[in-house]
Length: 122
Image (tube, rainbow, N blue to C red):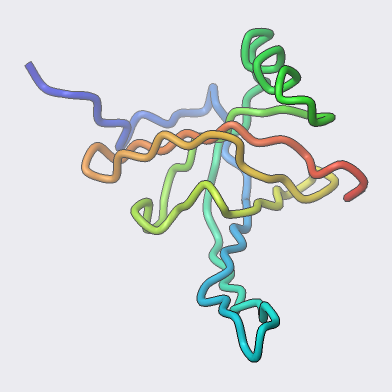
């Protein structure tokens, strides 16, 4: 029995949109002060879907205000480089989004993230 492999399963029912992933790499302390590393940017094609009620409730239990929660299914790119620390911007969607959970299986061409809009980033 073959395992999960999402490659080639994206069709017209689930419209893909453009996304930009922002990753910060290489921050360090210099003379006792933290200096941010370089920010890398990579384009992706993704499918956006609304989060389930259970996902929203789980995020709200963390005590942080969460707005505009979505599931992101990444269709392309170097999936092994995607990190939970990354931030996302989507075409035709206001604001910048942060990742709350990530399920990335590059060997299966599968990557799903639960993201929410960063409060005040509109």
